[in-house]
Image (cartoon, rainbow, N blue to C red; front, side):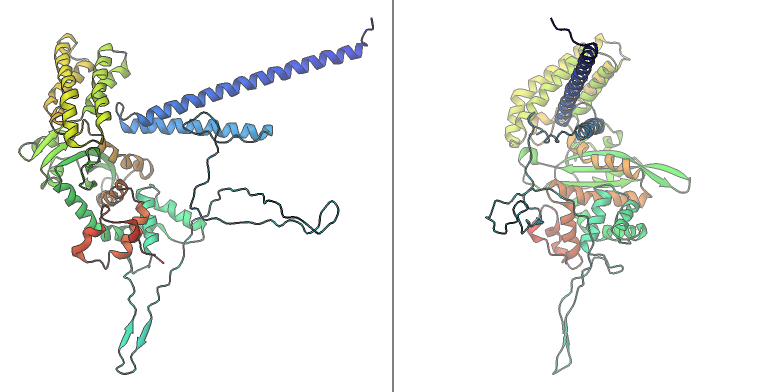
Length: 520
């Protein structure tokens, strides 16, 4: 039997060790990939759950969780791309949200397309020949960013002089939104939407324009924003009047920090919202969202806002509303607030009783999910048949369970809160136009929550009023599915010359995209 030379044996041992080491590394990498993919799957599942979770924790808490999970996914997926690039592997196509299989999404239709043609050489590099047959082109499509730009529009009014009588005749130039400085309606619309919808501070927007070689100072843009607010005021008043004329609204309020120069710090103002949205029960009345600002939270402010309103008002338990309820206004309470009280109990420690309460309330929401979008009459019939017995049993159960609990516990507080508002919580059973909760108003408050993270505070009470005014326009426009920048560009181009008695035609629910006039 032949024996392997010592050097060969040593090389074999070293080779085996190297193979074992590489195998261990591969196994470790595969485990890391599997772990990473599991984390991604878990995060995607959590995100899907949060996006469908309409009740429970407050909307701002859900928004924060979504932001955190989105950030985690971004970091993991960016790290995966770095690792693939270093390893020389081709990048994986993006995962389709609805499937675990990699799927390449098609490029959007309707985008401006630019062809960059790379001509083939005239001589064959192999034989030098110059005669070719036509072959199929190789085409690769990519999306490319086109930087934002600003253009100068020259409005030229042609003039003629009559030879016979010296009368000057001319074309009809549109009245510009702002004469001094002469910003066009499209530029004004972009600045307003960037500030109030995208929550970009004006000084940051000025820096962004500066990168394009365009000098527009923060103070100039602030002046323009103030003037636009004045131009839009007639439409804002019409939207608020529309809200006062309907008979079903949702309301909520949120604090806003406001600079108080006299004291050298900030004070707390309030922004109130009033929403009408009848899409959940096929009401043809146009939906609208009206915001108001006040320097404090006194009940006199909603009383003033709702001086001409009569009907059902969905609201939380704010004491300032109590004087409003009576002959003109009927209170409809929010079941989501009740549910939140029980949810807070579980956050402290497990509670089978709180779980039972949440399960019973969950049945009411399941019924609402099934009848959403049906007519008001059908919704009332279905609630009478299915929801009324569940709601009555819930009250009986709470009344029987409450005496058995320590009265200072949060669980007992949650039950007392529900019972104290039971009449208002039951209004929706007999009216298909009333909702189970006040989530419509809470959703309308989200722009304020997002905005506070960026602009931190309003510069003054007047600034708070301006925020409320502009949001009234932007959020109502969005409620009707329009692009607020496109809408404002058209409105600002026309509102100066528009007949006052026809301004209703410019309201978001009467305006049509086809009415947009070319700004240039």
